[in-house]
Length: 174
Image (cartoon, rainbow, N blue to C red; front, side, top):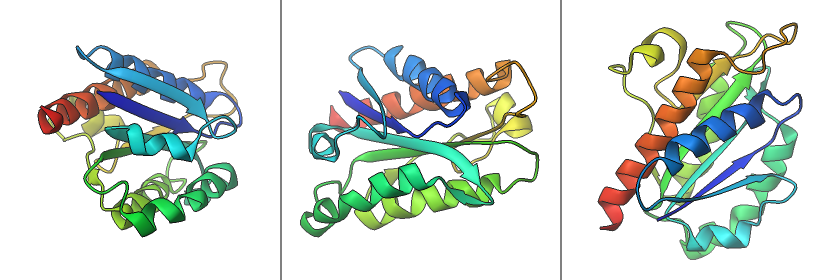
């Protein structure tokens, strides 16, 4: 089971969340996790993957230009239906509460829906998600004036999403 995680990170917050997601996915037996920044990620590798998770910092309710540029390279995969029925999930970090987190997550999900992917998020019965997260994926507020890149709740949410994606993917491919 191959899980590809792509992230754009500007201050290290989104990378820390991506690493927590990767750790959660890797905790599931049989999962091989491929973690890459947008600068090193290869869209051609996505065809070989069973699940794809991508994320970035949110900017005014939208996504970063770095991840958007990478996503825009997926046109040929869409034209050939290469990502249809792959599991997908998204994540985002923002600097302020009410800073457009859910809007950014929806912007991240839209290309996956166009690709025909099977979207998964975190349900409300995960306690930290009900208080700190979002049902559309993992969204974490990371104040820029803090020395801590990611809160304990953010780490827990990331690990939970990675584990959930790996478990669902495992059910679908076996």
